[in-house]
Length: 296
Image (cartoon, rainbow, N blue to C red; front, side, top):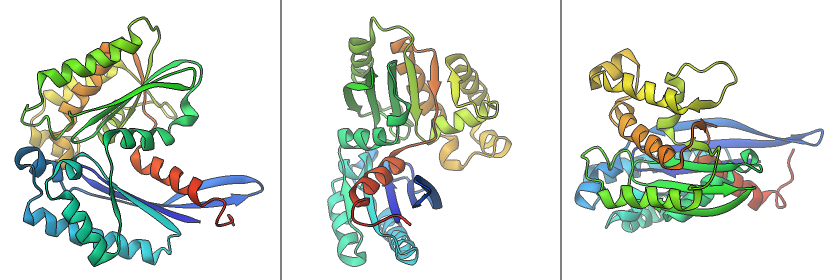
C-alpha cells in the first residue's frame, strides 16, 4: 500500500509518500519520497489577507508536480491539507477549487482543531500515565494539546506562529490567552513533559548536537541554542550553520514560542520526535484503507 500526504503550511509545503508493508505479522511504514518546497504563503496572507498572483502561479505549478509524483508512484490514497495561510486568505478557497478543477488534486482547508487532531494521530505511541504538553508551532498558528493518563484534557489553536511573528504583529492578548490556557490545566501539575513538533524545533534539536538515540531537549539547552542563534546575523545563520533562508529568519521567533509555553507550564524537558501533520495524515489514510487493500 502506498499513501501520500501533502501539508500546505504558511512557511513551506511538504509532500511525503509512504509505503506500508506487512512481513511475518509486522506492519512497516517506510518513507519512500519526501519533498519540501519553501513557498511562504503566510507572508502574503498575514500582511494583505490574500495570496499574491505570483505565489498563486507557483502554488499551481507545485501542485501539478506533486500530482505527477502521486500518479508515478501509483499511490493508493492521498490527502492534502492546508492550514492557517490558506484558511485565512480571502482567495484560499478559490485557489483550492482551481487546483481541483485543473489538476484533479483535492485540497482540504482545515481549521486549527482538525490540524491538532491530525498531528496527534502520529503521537499516540508516546503517551502514557504522565502529563504531556504538546506544542506544535507552525508559520501562522500554534496548536497546544494537554494530555493526562493517555487522555486529552484540552486542545486549542492560537493565531501566533513563526512567520506571523516576523514583523512582531502578534497581539499581546494572544500570548496572554495561550499562557492562561496552559496554566488553567497544568497549574498544579508536576513533571510536565513537553512534546515539540514542527520544523523549527527539529532544527533546534539538531543544533543542540544531541547524543545518539537521544530525542529529548532540556529547557536550558533550548535557551542556549536560541542564545547562540541570536548572536549571529541572518547571513551567518545561513552560511555558518547551513540553515535554509526560510529557516534562518523564523527559527528564533518559533523557538521563543516553545520556550514561553514551556515556562507557563513549568516544563523542564521536551521530547522532539520528528513527526508532524504529514505523519498524522498518513496514519489517518492507513486507518481508512487497511480493510480495503491487503498489505503485501
